[in-house]
Amino acid sequence: MKVLRKSSFLAVAVLIAIVQLGCGDQYRPVANPVVSPGGQPQTPHFAWVVNFNPSGLGTTTEIDVSGDTNIGVNNMGQGSVALAFPPNSLALFVANRDNDTVTEYLPTLTSVGPTTISLFPGSRPVFLNSGRAGFMYVVNSGTTSACPNGGSLSVIPITTLSVSNTVCVGPNPTTMAQSSVNFFAYVINQGDGSVSAIDTGPSLAGTITAQQGLGQNPVSITASTNGSWIFIVTQGDGVSPGTLDIVGSGGTTVAASVPLGVRPTFSVIDPVLNRLYVANSGDNTVSVFDASNVNPSGSTPIPLLATVPVGTNPIGITPLANSSNFYVANAGSNDVTVVSANSFSPLTTVPLPAGANPVFIASDPTSSKVYVADQGISATTIIRTVDNTVAGNIASPPQVQGCISNCALQQPMMIVTQ
Image 1 (spheres, rainbow, N blue to C red):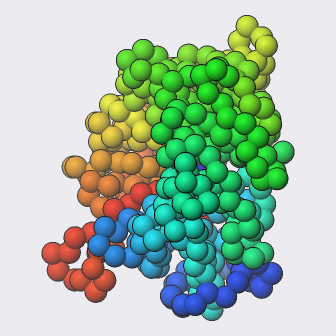
Image 2: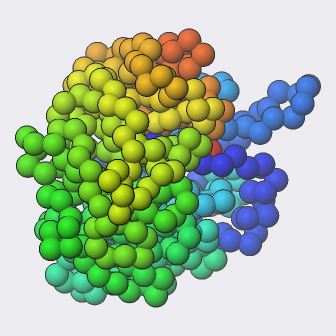
């Protein structure tokens, strides 16, 4: 699932660090890029890959967008599986599932070490997201003493870098979305097929189930660009088409539903074109909706702009910031389909390395590069968008630190850019 972040100047990072960052108990060096002199100053951009390590500490890999180089590997906690930036922040948060912690650090500074934020024992954090500046929200899949009957959602203010609130949700939550306007958060509970609505208290405002109009087996959730709507992708029985369920932010019932393709798995908002893309893994298509024209009471609750044929088993989509194309990672055919955002026509297919098994795709803010997390080969593939060719493959770190020969590598899980 792809994440686009607003670019920020490095000088801002210093100010944010002074105001926001608590001191960590360890220091791990992070390399800073060297920007070539001459010409108009340019803001450097980076991609960060979180790597899962079954044998030790997980890591993040920092990739320089302009140079296609690995400029830093940072140790995180046990079982690192997800990462995210809060809005308008350079503080990167990483969920460490296997030791119930979240790591926070500023990649642009070498003088301040990471902070480890402890959660309730047994929390097993699996996802992070935020639509609210100054806060990070953590989805915890495990049961704890505070929430013995299900998972939970933890709130971390950036000013304190400690958990301020934990709200109990349903069993085995997997992902969430949050409105950027009223800050209601919605959490998908895979264990019982429900969605928990969390208000700004924070407290549980309600649970959306089939009785409230929710489709069977919700798998992906996205907030609209204007924060007014929550889009929930449900798979149904995996044979018949799934549905897109629309909830007004702050609401606890489904306002409208529209059909999707077969076995949809992933959704993402294009904040520039104001579109919603949904990957339908069962029929190898992408549904494209006009998210600027939502009317649950109308005959067309959300207009379907196109259904685009792509590769086999699409699992991720990333739109370019320049609005030219969007890229679809196909796990079954082991490639990436490039689609015109204007004509909705597939333009070309970019092959990935043999056995790549892509699990995530993201693009950088300059629209010059696309990054694919290839779990099958423990590497990140870089695609150059000017000619849609592979610019390189960056291997994940070894599972055993210091290994230099015949090393088992960590698995890339997710990518963010800024």
